[in-house]
Image 1 (cartoon, rainbow, N blue to C red):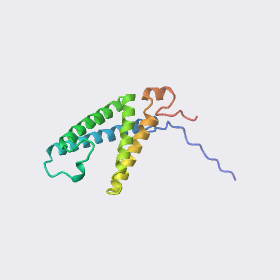
Image 2: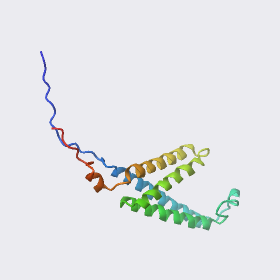
Image 3: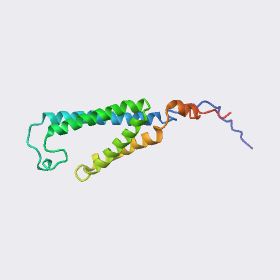
Length: 157
């Protein structure tokens, strides 16, 4: 006795992110949060009046925390602007974001002996930002739709 199975009816399948826009939003949010965190670092650097660590004497940018505060402000401005412009499809912001993700991942590895979990989280976030911007940042949503990558794949009637 043979049993016949009815094929399910074809319904358009809605995919949340066929074109990678979610990855770009993720990268933009991570870059923006990193920029806000640098603002907090700058506030700390400007307001701190305690004793300085011994190893700051031979630091790259000198002994003054005010210098570091202004560097943090500049980096924060770049990261926040990059986050905004990545959402608008800027290719320059995309590559600045890739460099920021790479520098964040590399610099986190220096803290690995002291904060292993947080360092690995920073490395992973940097890697995800690089992936998002390299794999999905090259084309706008309109060009992905023009290539045939749409939110609704064609039905299989």
